[in-house]
Image (tube, rainbow, N blue to C red; front, side, top):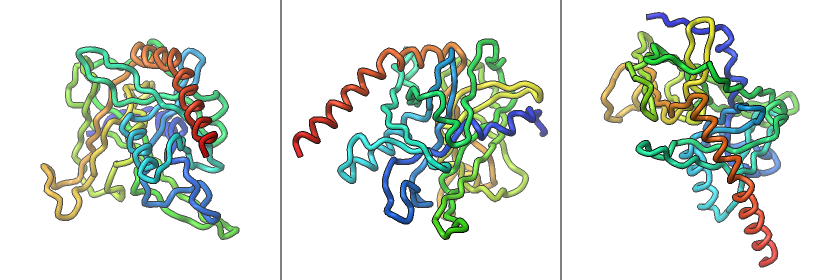
Length: 280
C-alpha cells in the first residue's frame, strides 16, 4: 500500500546527525570513530525560540558506559559530520509522567548556531502541528550504525561516510494516548539496508502528503532482515520501529524541565572536573 509523504519530509535528514563519543582516535582519524563503533542519532529541535539536541536516554547511557570502561568520565559527545561539533552535555532525562514510565529521551540545550556548523537545521516544534490519531503511517529518520563506512578523501585522509535512512512504516491503530507507539510494515523486496539499529534518537514524523509534523523520537528500531542463525518471530524483510511519543505539549514540558535543571547539573560536572585536575 502506498502512503502519502510530503516532498519536504524527504529533506528531514537535515534535522538529525550521527552522535558518537567525543573520543580522540589518533592522528589519522582525529575524532572520527571507527566505522564499526557504537553510534546513534541525535535530533535538533527548536521550540519557543530555544534550540536543543535530543536523543534516546539509552543512547547516552551506552556512550557513557563505553567511556567509563576506559576510565573516562565527562567525556562528552560528538556529531561527526564534517567538520564535526562537540556537545559536551549533560543530556537530561525528564521525569516520568505517572503512570507512564520515564521517557527514553535525553535532552541538552545547545547554541542556536551549532547545528548549522555541520549543515543541519533544527526542526521547529509548533503548536497546531500535532498528529491526528490513529496515524496511518510514519517516517523515522536516522543514521544506522551498520551503514557507516570509511572512505578516503583526495588528500588521502580517512573520512566516514554516513548514510541517512528514511524508514516508512504502517501505524498499528494506536490511539495516541500511550507513551510509545509502534510502526510496522512488511517489505516485498529485500532492501540494501539490513539493520535500522543506530536510528535511536532520530525524529519520527507523520505526513498527509502535503504537511508533516513530529510524532516523537525513535526508541527502538529492529533489523530489517533477521541475522543469520538468529531466532526471531519474522523471516521476511520488514520495517519495525518503536517511537517515544511526543507532541507540542510534551516537548514543551520536557524542555521546561531541562531549562530549570541543566545549569545546575553542568555546574556539578565542572566542579568534579576541577576537583580531578587539582588532585592530579
